[in-house]
Amino acid sequence: MNTNKLQDCDIIWVNAVLAGVGSDSSIIHNAAIAVKDGKIAWLGKMSDLPTAPQRMANEVHDVNGCCI
Image (cartoon, rainbow, N blue to C red; front, side):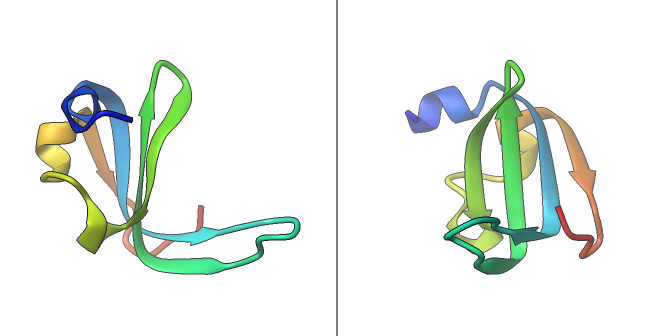
């Protein structure tokens, strides 16, 4: 997704642990997941965020290390 469009996300959850399922059962610590129009727009390590969470989304939720 274009970085400019990431600034228009609806919600981003930060400080998460992301757990994959199925054939990709990897775990990402210190992760974030951004949603736009009900679809995942971006996910990955917080250190890889293209910009500050507050610039990416209207709502930012810190999940304090909870697993998503």
